[in-house]
Length: 349
Ligand code: NAD
Image 1 (cartoon, rainbow, N blue to C red):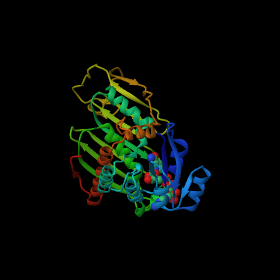
Image 2: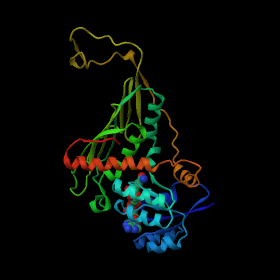
Image 3: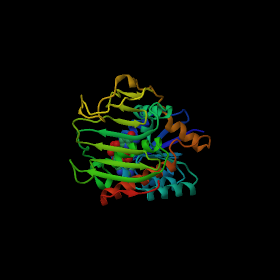
Image 4: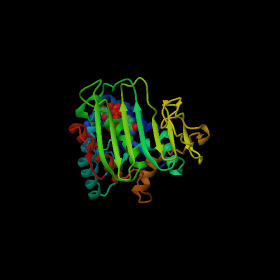
C-alpha cells in the first residue's frame, strides 16, 4: 500500500520533513493545510495540494497520515481532529503541552484504531549515539551521573518560540529532546525532579533551565539549556565508576578516559602537589588511566517514516512509543511544578 501524508503547518520543520527526511517508496507527501497564505503558496510551489480549511483537508485530501508541525500549543486540538477523522498521526515534539492532553490523544487513537507517534529525531544524533554506545559496551563501568547541555548566546528567536500562549520556551523546545534522550538511556524509574528556569532575555517564557532527575538505582542526570552562554560547557559529561566521557560542541571532539587495573597508591601525609596541599585532589599517576577515542556510532536518521508505516501494518514496534512520550510529558509536567514551587518533586515515573 502507498501511504499519503498530509502536513498541518507548512513551516520550517514541515519543509524539512517534506524535502530532507528520507522516506520509503510507499510514503508520499500529497497535501498541506496552513492558516498562512504564504505558507500555502510555498507548499503549492513544492508540488502539494493545499487547503486553507482544516475540515476540508481532513475530509477531502484522502491522506492516511497527518504530520502535525505547528506551534506547540496547537498540537493537541489539530492532532485530535486528525485522529477523529481516522488519520494516523506523527506529532512534532513536544507532542502536547502536558501529559493529560497526551493521554486524551492516546485514548482517542485507540478508539479510532490509528497509530500515533512523536518525532524524537535527536535520538539519532551522533553525540547521543556515542554516549549510548559507550554506556552499552560498558567501557566506563556503571554510570552514575550524566550531564547533558545545549547552550547558545543569541537568546530565543523572536517568533512564536518566545510566546507563552504558543508553547514557547526552552523546556518545550530543546528540553523535550534532552529529556527524551536521558529517558531512552535509563529505563529505571525517575524518583525526583527539580527544575529552575532562567529569564535572562525574556520574562514571558523560560530562556533556559536546569533540570535534575534522580533515578531509583542512584543514577542522576542534569539537563541544562542556556541561551546566554558565551562560553559553553561540553555537550556531554558522563561519569561511570571506571571512567568518564566528554563530548564537546559542535565538532563532537572528545574522549573516553578509563581506569586501568593499576591500584592507586595513597600518600600517608599531605604533600605539596600540583593541586596545592591536598591528598584527595592530587592528580592521578598517568599510568593508571588510558584515553580512548570516541566510537563512530550508526545513526539511523531515516527511521521515522520507514518504522511508522511498518508499525501501522503491525510489522514493527513503534520507534517512539506512546508510553515513552507519556514519560517525557510527565517529567515536563513535574518540571513546571518544581520550578513554580521551587521544590524537589518526588515521583515514580
Ligand atoms: P514555523 O513557525 O516555522 O512553522 C509553523 C507553521 O504552522 C507555520 O507555517 C504557521 O503558519 C503554521 N500554523 C500556525 N498555527 C497553525 C494552525 N492553527 N493550523 C495550521 N497551521 C498553523 O515552526 P517550526 O519551526 O516549523 O516548528 C513547528 C513544530 O516543529 C514545533 O512543534 C516545533 O517544536 C517542532 N520542531 C521540531 C524540530 C525537531 O528537531 N524535531 C525542530 C524544529 C521545530
